[in-house]
Amino acid sequence: MNWQRWIAVGALATSLLVAAHAQNKPKPPATPRIYVFENGAIKGLDVALFNFKREELKEVDFVDASYLIVHPRGTLMFDSGTVPDNQFKGDGKPVVEGVISATQPLLPQLASTGYGVGDIDYFAMSHYHSDHTANANLFAKATWIVQKAERDFMFSDKPAGIVQPATYDALRNAKTKLLDNQDFDVFGDGTVVIMSTPGHTPGHQVLAVKLANAGTIVLGGDLYHYPEERTTGRTPTFEFNVEQSKASRARIEKYLKDTHGTLWIEHDKATLVSLPKAPKYVD
Ligand SMILES: [Zn+2]
Image 1 (cartoon, rainbow, N blue to C red):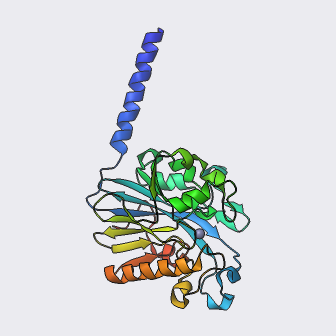
Image 2 (tube, rainbow, N blue to C red; image 1 turned 180 degrees about the vertical axis):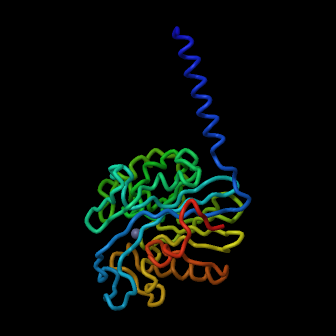
Image 3 (cartoon, protein in one colour; image 1 turned 90 degrees about the vertical axis):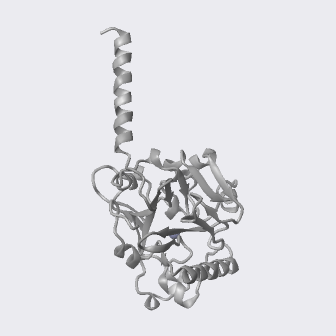
């Protein structure tokens, strides 16, 4: 075969692959849905960091989760796990790093929904702490929705604290929707809204999703870590700004009351256990 024919064969194969991919991409749903991904656990935490004693908490260990929101007009990935996919050896064994562990990478869970990384239109994180940014680099082709104060911190000369800049470095050049302590209606119809909730970090944000059957769900990020924070009003010892945290919590509690909404605390084991996991979804 001469080289022109090789090129023709190559072009044909590429177009078949593209067609196959286009065919595989699911049809947009009629109403929004949320897919839940399991991203491991954080065990052996010092609960004093959260202003609690052991006996005051039902469950000490954190779980870690992330979410894909599929809307009739596009897709949004919210948070990205605590262990980067590239740390899995492919041998099916869990990854354990100190207090952090995970049994499965994120991308196969995402693929189970029919959507791939290239199908993600928007990417947002509740905040920059490393238990939410692990796979952020994978979503650098999406439009990154971030509060200015958060982004400024993430790309400051020496960001300090619970931070792994290498996991999100690719976002530096991502197409970015920069918010200045603002909410953002992602698809323009009020069903998927980023809500500014500073305090835990300078630009912490939560995501409110209005579902046809399940009603309003707020993906709470780290607005709270333990359900007991919600009932006692206590805040962690390491908040960026406690007064802001309290104001943000009050705002979201009012919103939940007004909308008869449900809060999903991202690190709460009981919440995650109760939810269907991808490829199942909540709608
Ligand atoms: Zn966290």
